[in-house]
Structures are given as C-alpha cells and as structure tokens.
Figure 1 (cartoon, rainbow, N blue to C red):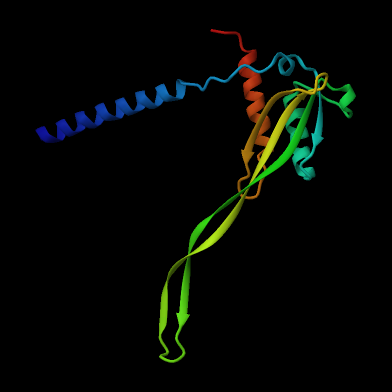
Figure 2: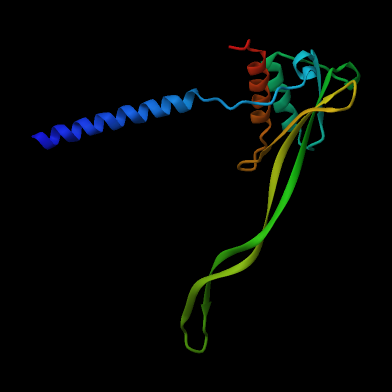
Length: 172
C-alpha cells in the first residue's frame, strides 16, 4: 500500500511539472524583426502574380480581402505596396534505395534486395515579396515549401498578418 502511495505521489508531481513546463513553452513567443514603416502604414496593395498559377493570386486576394488591412487595387500606380507572388525551385540530387527482384532463367531462382540508385527531387517554394511601390525596394519577403503539391500562399499571408498585428499591439 505504501508503494502505491509513493507511485501516485511521484506521478502527480511529474504531471504537475510537465503541465507547468508546457504552459511556460506556450507563453514564449518568437520575436520578429520589425516590419518597415511602409508595410505598417500602407493603405493600398496590388497583387502581381509572377507564379503562373491563378490559384495563388486568388488565394492571396481572398486572404487579403478577409483581413481588411489593405485595399486591393487593380494597378501598380494606385498602390502603396506591390505583393509579388513567385515560385522558386531547388533541385536536390542524391541516392535512394530501391527494391530489386531478379529472376535467373537458368536456375529458376529469384534474387531480391535493395540497390542504391541515383535520384533527384525538385522542391517547390512559394515566395511572397512586398515591394514599396514608390521606391521599388523590397520591404518584406518570405517563402514556404509546397506541401502535397499545394503552394503555401495562405500560410504566407497569415504569417504576414500575424507580424503586422503583433507590431500594431502596444508594447507591454
């Protein structure tokens, strides 16, 4: 009986410690570099789709419209910021194991095993750049790896929104 109490006491201490540590981790936030003033004060934005995928521009438009911070305009000349959508790719070469099964027609036996063979993979990244329409300078840029052949446009707009909203909050 005494052992059961000790085990219960140790278990409750561990559970309490773990929950306190996880709560502390949740409170820690990643600090971001401040966004340029132009990003914070801009009122209008033009979406320039250099990606070749209409879906990416549609997603950016929908996300920006729902956010409501910027008025989306139909010409660069009317914009404070130009949001440029692009895709970059990166080739990765290496070797990968492949299963091989060979039949010997003379003996009738099969040989199985893995063989390393050369392979290449292509990684696709969605890239967003915010360009100051007055100067042509890049005010902010980020990129995300495609997941399951899906561009990360929505995730990038959400990240931008989060940064802007964090910066708009008054300091504690």
